[in-house]
Length: 126
Image 1 (cartoon, rainbow, N blue to C red):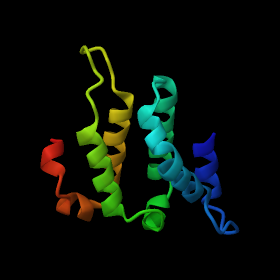
Image 2 (image 1 turned 90 degrees about the vertical axis):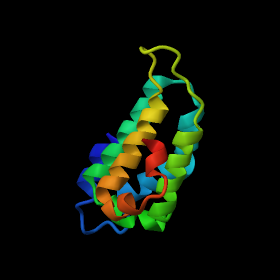
Image 3 (image 1 turned 120 degrees about the vertical axis):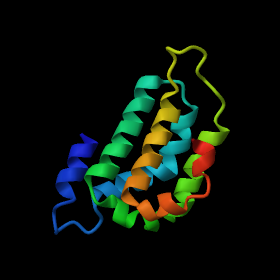
């Protein structure tokens, strides 16, 4: 529902602060770290799916620098990925937060190819 609201209302010229900006700011500043710590796979998957949906289906990426410089955000995400303790014990286990971090970082690289090209930590992530 949040994704649908963001996508539809972002098109309205009458709204000064776009819902997508409000939600992405909330997600990045208040929810991201928490989502990496909780042990509720369904909720964490929903959070990252919503984060990525709003980011990719709206033009919020154009305002991302107002929340945090994009290169700093990419660096912070990569540090979370690299420093994350391995949670997968068997091949059937999934580290939902790790998958979400990778997906969001990938989406940032898709929207900002110049950051991908100059990203210092790309080899360590591979």
